[in-house]
Amino acid sequence: MALITLRQLLDHAAQNDYGVPAFNINNMEQGLAIMSAAQKCDAPLIMQASRGARSYAGDIMLRHMVQALAEMYPGIPICMHQDHGNNEATCLSAIRHGFTSVMMDGSLEADMKTPASYDYNVDITRRVTEAAHAVGASVEGELGVLGSLETGEAGEEDGSGAVGKLTQDQLLTDPDQAVDFVTQTKCDALAIACGTSHGAYKFTRKPDGEILAMSTIAAIHEKLPNTHLVMHGSSSVPQELQDLINASGGEMPQTYGVPVEEIEKGIRMGVRKVNIDTDCRMAMTGQFRKVAQDDPTQFDPRKFLVPAMKEMEALCLDRFQRFGTAGQASGIKVVSMDEMAARYLSGALDPNAATAKAA
Image (cartoon, rainbow, N blue to C red; front, side, top):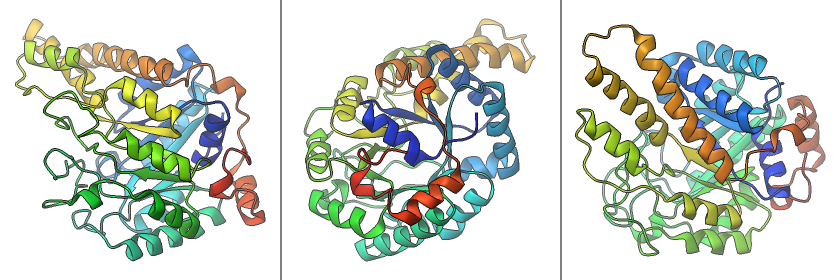
């Protein structure tokens, strides 16, 4: 099956009341694990690559890898997404290399360390959206700065993460400002800040309303009921994976992620895309450590990678099932990027009417 745009996939998700996990990938084994899980439950999906992944694997390798996976699993719609683009060049180069969707993270300046002004964010996201829509690609914007409500600081992932203390206003997306942002930029999806952060060390205790502001998602959804919302930093950091890593020689301090039941609540509030990276890393690393500990003589990489892939596949399958993604792939008829470009040009894909104007 051909690759799908983020907009078409999230429109389908909104019409059918489910969320779509967005799994970060760096290599073939991660891709195979995700696709095996998707095939087992008939789930569409988002594969996303950060700038760090693009540097690690290379754009050509990533493009051919995702295209090969689409050929191997022809019944599964795949959106190929650039995660946390830092400027126009990063986003547009991704589209030239076959990505069907990009995130322009204008919440930070191009260094991905300095919180940006609202005007800067609006301007650069609008410019990227105009260019992407001209060729049918989708755009995710971000409003608010990803970071912890406990510490006021941001976690870092692949070089992305605000430096210094952040204010409450920065850490929580303003619902009224969100309306203006979507109206001005015409982005297809909006990543919001609600207390989640990158990496494994999100919370020092199981999160409640004080440190995970699900009420912010509800307030934004009330004002933008037809705009697709995105939760970043949403790995759940499962206790069993922490225990597996530590039982096999690791030294992960106790930490807490975003409970899956809170993500399920978010999906009922209009969240359509859920970013997951840390959980996948932990699943694979836990098995690497276990194999190394159980058989110190082992040197064949495949003996490490096969169980790692199985562990990650199980995690992905769980998320497909719990987010309501399972069973949805066969109901999607992929629309070409040329057709999507024509729909953008005609005005049929207004971001404020996403559910009513599904592709």
